[in-house]
Every structure is written in C-alpha cells, then in structure tokens.
Length: 276
Ligand code: SF4
Image (cartoon, rainbow, N blue to C red):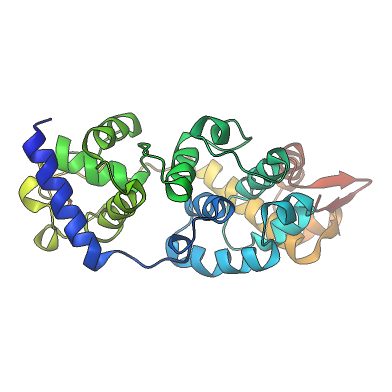
C-alpha cells in the first residue's frame, strides 16, 4: 500500500473525526468492564438501542464483581430488548472467569469464555490504549472500500488497519473508522458526496451491495419462537411448559426450550421452565 495514500487517508479521516466523532456513553470511560459491556452489546444490536440498555445494565451491575455475583437469570432480565441472549450468558461467564479483574492483554482477554479476537482487541485498545488492529462490520466496509474497492473480509481489514493505523491514539483512530462506516460509508447508499476520504477511495460508491442473504425461513422463525419464549421467561421468571406451549402456540416450543436449556439460558424441572 503506497505510504502517501495511507497518510492522506489517515490525515483526512482524523481531521474529519475531530468535528464529527459521535459522543457515545462508552467513549467517556476507560473502565475495561464498561468497555467490555458496550462491545458485547454492540455486536448484534444497533447503537440507538444499546445506549439506554447500557446505562440500565450498568446501574444494575456497576462492576465486574457485581456482574460475577449476579444470578444469570437477573442478567438475562436486564438484557431484555437486546436480543441474542447468549451474549448475556457469555458476558456473565467472562465476569465469573475473570475473578474480579479483566486481563490487560489481548491474549488474556481472548482467553475468557465468549470473548473473541474483535472484542479483546477493542477492549485492550479502548481501555488501555493498546495499538492493536481489529475490525467490526463498519470498519470492514469502510477500509475495504477505500483500499480494495469493496467490503473487506475481517482478515483483510485487520491487515489494512495494521498498515494504516497511526502511532498515537489508537482508540481515537478506531472510533474515527467506526464513525466513518456507521455514518458516511454506510452499507446502502454511502454518502460519498459528504465523505472526507473521497479522494483516497477506490470504490467511490461503486461497491456492489451483496444481495441480502436470506436465512432459511425455518431458522428465522426458530429465532422468533426462541425470542418469544425468552420474553415470557424474563417477564415472569418461571412458567409451566404447558402454559408456555399454549401461549406461544407453536409445536416447536418443547424442542426449542430443550435447546435453550442446553445452552444454559433456561432450566427445566418437572414440567416447570425457569430462568437459571
Ligand atoms: S467515497 Fe463513498 S465508498 Fe468511499 S469511503 Fe467514502 S462513502 Fe465510502
């Protein structure tokens, strides 16, 4: 990658970010626990829904120790509205495994249950200023379009990030990249006319948006039924399987309750389904 192009991209992006960076609650802290909570929530939930949930969650579980001490059922109740409750389970497991203090290094974070390379990189960077490359969906899209003319794979984006990341302030750098992908270089109809890195971009809006991959209808509706079961349980904490079947009115309820129990998200005993 020509150094001149990388430098032009970096300078323009950082200049733009100073005026246009988003002020988000998790950017006002370097507490690794708070950063971890935000990163796990942001994995599959839009920012607008994460903001109120993040504040609420931290009111309830203000520290890593508080989360580790909590019952998983209480954590799942606080997770309501965010979807994909396995994330709450993994966050809880990570808190228990960390024994009161999150590791500082990427490798140490990565070794916690349910914490992958992206999250460990983001927490090390945003909490401790580690100069580590990582890429979420927004970063893959923005870096890929600029340097490859198309959305990059995670591996490609991490390699580009490593090559163009400035020496100073890696946290500010990654916030800027995320903001570019989330507010300007969006998936459909990127705002190229308002883009600070237009001159350096290989795609200039020409990245073909891949056809939306339709998940198998069955899997999609499985998820809907699971969601309905979890909503009832987080509201009421325990119900009989018979009542659950009647209220959800779907023949898959017994199988999906079995799956949720196997994942540790529910407990089933003598015909009663409860939060763990
Ligand atoms: S010019 Fe368009 S495609 Fe390129 S980075 Fe900017 S918004 Fe994205």
